[in-house]
Image 1 (spheres, rainbow, N blue to C red):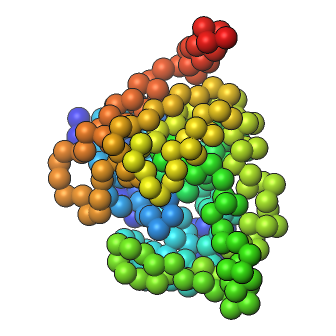
Image 2 (spheres, rainbow, N blue to C red; image 1 turned 135 degrees about the vertical axis):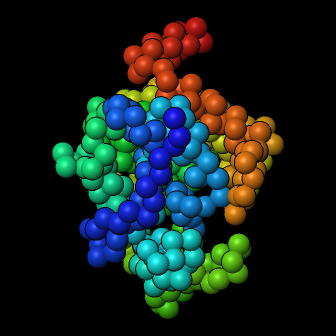
Amino acid sequence: MEITKRTNLQIDGKHNKPILIDLIFKDDKKPKPIIIFCHGYKGFKDWGAWDKMGEFYAEKGYFFVKFNFSHNGTSPENPTEFLNIEAFGDNNYIKELDDLQTVIDWVLTPDFDQAQQIDAKSINLIGHSRGGGIAIIKAAEEERIDKLITLAAVSDFASRFPKEKELEAWEKKGVRYIKNTRTGQQLPHHYQFYKNFRENRERLNIQKSTKKLDIPHFIAHGSNDTTVSIADAGNLFEWSAISKLLLVENADHVFGISHPWNKDELTKEFQHVLNRTSEFLAASVQDLKDEYIDNDEAES
């Protein structure tokens, strides 16, 4: 059966900007486990091979959902370009958590127009990089999440902010700029980003959220990741109660994928990640818990 795609669906976010969503699934009218994917910093739902990833999981029998965070700098008119840089500057972690909650709630509404295609009792989150941190916090808060997969995820938000004099200069000017190496754009971060983090520091503590998780957690990280240290994967593995760790030899932050990705084949590194995460998703929660307990006992 061919894969069905419904792209660039638009729903209202909580923060006066729309959320753009893609649905990828087999239209067999059978309930399927849901996967919701969160892109990372300076990312978007159509980046690189995220669409190919959606097709891969759809072929395996999942209902795949990917979306643009409402303030990621793109717009419904230009979903792959950072033309709305003021929105980018106004983004923060709380807005992203709210966006993810909005997407979860939307998929699970009784009048969702693909309701017959989903199994509302099986929801899995995948997050890449910063989106991995967001997915962890939401999985710790949201009781309806069954399993969590993080790809090259950050383990701490606080350490990624500037320190001392740089922080003071940011507060004084009200804005600082980050270069988008792919496009050459100077993208703004308004000081509200740090202020919002500071005001919500407890909720945005990834370590605390990871330790609260009581669901299976698959952690994948490339050994040559220069964007997010491999130590972050080690932290998450140590903190997460029921976790599997996949270190991918010679893989970078995006597992060898680039944007745009016009090839049919994926890199062997990314394909390996998809194959292993597919096995993880196919296993029952109880089997994964039992396996973790067995491994733990064997090591002790």
